[in-house]
Structures are given as structure tokens and as C-alpha cells.
Amino acid sequence: MEKEEIPAQKCNNPECEKPAALQCPTCIKLGLEPAFFCGQKCFKDFWPLHKLFHKKKKEDKGDDSGIVNDGFKYTGPLRRYEISKKRDVPAHIQKPDYHKTGQPLSEIKVQGSKHIPVYTDEEIEGIRLASKIGRMALDAAHAAAKVGVTTDEIDRVVHETIIENDAYPSPLNYYNFPKSYCSSINEVICHGIPDMRPLQDGDILNCDISVYKDGYHSDLNETFLIGDVAESSKTLVTAAHDALMKAIEICKPGVMYRQIGKVISDHVEELGFSVVRTYCGHGVGKLFHCNPNVPHYKGNKANGFMKAGHIFTIEPMINAGKWKDLLWNDNWTAVTADGQRSAQFEHTLLITDDGCEILTARTEDSPPLEIHL
Image (cartoon, rainbow, N blue to C red; front, side, top):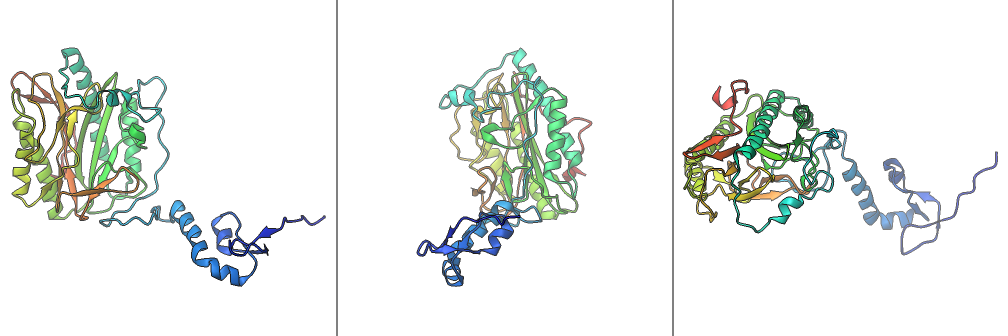
């Protein structure tokens, strides 16, 4: 058999470019395009720059543990892990306008408006059904959340529960979010992406579930204790839960939306915790996010008064340390700037003629919250 003729290569050192036959062995091992050098001298001279290509390949690939080695300066112990592909939604299920493009054009169209929707009885029933399915999905996530289970596996449970009810998981492809719910562990405040990291003993996990059913969205979340959790974390989670419930107690026609923040802040700050300011509650219904804006900290300038027929969320994010946050380089995961833990609870609420109704309320079948055991 005739030997194949290999085309002549040039040295990868840009200051040389002589004919080269010496290949970098690390490039071969990592599966990179072959890098050729004319000799050991050029190889050593160009090594400080060339090795950066190896580093980039390792970051993209991750390691055997599933951790994504992205070189990011994390604020706490948690790290990014690999994620699985997006899950499919059957063709017969009604989908929001962003399910293909990632762009919620209906929301974008009303940005800047101060109008707060007042829903009709028929529309309220639609949102109530979406809320019921959301509660079912969150309870299923809670039942699955145990030591050793990945948040990706919980994503499967949530996704399947929602589509079995002929509904669509609202987060999926919303501004290109890749999963069907948000999983926020320990120092993650919100919008964590479900991945291959197994839950560990002592974690706290927030599961944020949103559902789109027959043209209407709902939104709710809870924070769960995984295994044997430190008393300090239990206190934090309890404070977040109680702050939400205290805020709900004041909701009725005529109350200013800005008052909610004072109730929440007064409760948690007395316990030594802080309230996140970057993210707020919001209107929900025909749109995933709309007016009113509902900040959770005192001294906010939220517009509007509650009125019968308004539907919105309250979802205070409570930090063990300072309130400030930063974003991971996945452009979604918001974490505490000081690396300390954060907890959150959320309900979708309807303002009635004389008070409010929790559309996403827990049921007799809901797994009990660990903070109340």
C-alpha cells in the first residue's frame, strides 16, 4: 500500500512559519486541531500563548465531575454543572409566543405602560386553573427533592407533571432560558438553571414553578430543606416564608403596592436578614410578567393601589448577609454578592372585593414544609 503524502505544515509560532512536523501532544489528547512546530525551541517560545487554547478546551468540556470549569470568580461554594438538552413539549399543547424565538413579544409590546390589568371572572378562572397545575408541579418537585437527586431530574418531574395536564412550563425558552423551572440552591437568589449537580445533605433548594395553560400564566415557589440543615438556614427559610405571609395579610382593595416592601423589611431586618432589591413581584395572567411591579424592600416607589381583579405575585428574596447580588456568566443565575445563603417563597394572588385569594395556596395533599415539621 502506498504511503499517504501529508501536506507540508507551517510552524504555529507566527514569528517563524517554517515548515513544521512536530505536533503538540496535548492538542492531540484534547481533540483540538493539530498544532505544528518546527522544533522544540519554537514550541517552548510559543508555549505561554499556545497553552491558552488547551485551557479554553477544558473549560468548554468540563471535567469528570460534571462541573463546568469556566474560570468564573464565584462568591460561594456552589459551581456551575453541565445541563441536559431542552425538553420537548407535545404539539397539541398551547404555547406562549416566545416558545420558538425566545422573545416574549406580547410583553415587550406593553413595556413602559403603567396600566394594571383588571381580570374578568372568566379570565380569573383561567388563571386559577394555571395556578392549580402550578401547585401540583411544585408539590411534585418537593416530593422529588432529596439528597442525591439532581435538579435536572426534578426538572423532568416538573416538566412531565405540567405537560400531563396539557399545559406549558412558562420558563422554557423565555428569553432562551433552557429549562422548565428555576432551581436556586444555597447562595443562589433566583433563576438558577437545573443541572447535573446532586443535591447534598444540608442544602436549601428553591423551586420556582410557572405554568401556561390555555392562554394564562401562574407563578409560585417554595424553598425546601434537603437532609440535615443547619439551624441558621432553617431560620432564614422560615423568615422568608413568614415575610410572604405577613405581606399577604395586608392585601386588599385600596392598599398601596409600595406598602408590601415595608411589611417584609420590618419582619426580616429585625432578624438580621436583608431583602434583595434587584428582583420584584409582578403582575401575572395573560402575560408571564406585567404590571404591577411589587418591590419587597421598604422605601420603594412602586406605583398603584390594589383593586379587585388585580392578579400579581409577591416573592420576597431574603439574604442571610447583604442584599446585593451578582450574575453568573450563564446570564441567568443570580447569587448573593457575599456568598451567603438566600431563601424565597412566592404566591400568585387575586385581589377580591374585601381582601385577597391565594390562587397558588398549598392543599391538603401538599408535602409539609420542613420548617413546620
